[in-house]
Image (tube, rainbow, N blue to C red):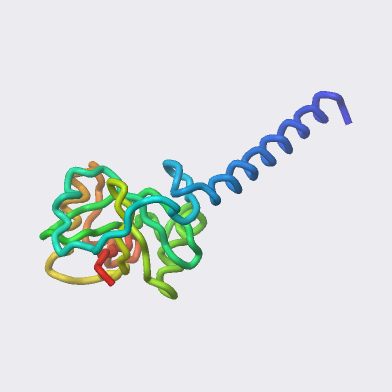
Length: 167
């Protein structure tokens, strides 16, 4: 084996080890780090979930922790009719099937904690496939994030829409 090939393979192995170490460290971190899923929340004031989520309308993202397994992630959100919604897109794509594990895990345990502005809200995720409000929620996501969602995305299962409700 040539010296250049040995160096290249050593470099590749080093990169994979570094990525593994970073992912391990992030999983023990207090919450997510941008697009990387983090560990369970360790800070924040636990408060009662409100009936009106309009105070989050201008927030770009929230942090959401699922309970099984206890991992947190950064989520886009939409507030519609004072109700809080998150969406998981690309569920039918190859990348989505690898990257998007949490929606399937919610089937077994739909409990979650949302952290926003240093406050923790104990909630449950309720998936919606139909309802009069879905078009309005999709419109909010499209306006807020320049997304290209439509009701066909929900119907086909390519996008999963969840409402976050108090427990």
